[in-house]
Length: 398
Image (tube, rainbow, N blue to C red):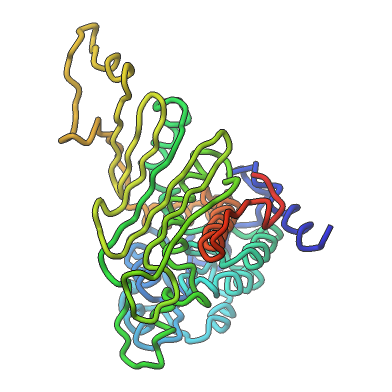
């Protein structure tokens, strides 16, 4: 057995543990008044957008920010509560701060693994934005490092923290929609996904999502959330994937596809479809979970249940009265109403709680690694125009 295969098999063998509690070290000791002090590495749209949410969480403080683009760094520092954070253009200098407990990594995908490994080596807890790492090697290296430390590692698949999504997953596992046969997921937009560039030499730094060297494109940036959800519901990983994509609409020099269409096959014959368009925003973001007793449809913040066939008739009999009406929401099925916070804010709250209480996050390094592997499988299937199997890559099953 090759060393690489051995390392990955050993580290991902814990996948069945799911969200079990690990024997973790002491949470954090450097901050006064039990305040978690975090540094934000990468202050673009996502990293900078999370700062105001951190500001709203009690005993959670942005102490430092880092970005290689001065205008983004300055904008982020202005968002910090009290404007007390220090700015850096080299993340390694930020990691040298002894008073820093954790880091949030929101840099281009190809840098995630290196920065996260350096942060763990520096003794920091890590919140790493999705996709966790780029490619199989980066995923393997980061997974191995995170499991060898006593630090908290959370992957930024924020819907894993959504109380609505958690409730829906529980409903599905309790048999609400019966035997699941398929998932239909989409995330459609109408726009070129391009950021303005003040100077030509900054093109790849700003529009890194357009270039394969740095990015996994739509699969990594959008589909990864829904792939993570399907892995979560099925408690499995896909056996294989097929798909197509292309640069068919935006002829602007980009290298990552402007449309993707993937089908993953899971155990028990469950099929999961993923579609992303950038030329049509019809129905925007949506997940359909289809079972033999009904279906559940989710968007960003809402969910609806659609009973199926005879099951629908049975549900229509309320208090023994046949034909009684049910609360349908404008043709969208029966609403599933659950109080829940913004998923991104909830994910940050969960991270702080995990660090404080020394518990493993629900969106952890194992679930993050599974999603990252699925992303790379999808990319390989499209780029190579072939069916790609899970075992073809890491020699692992679930």
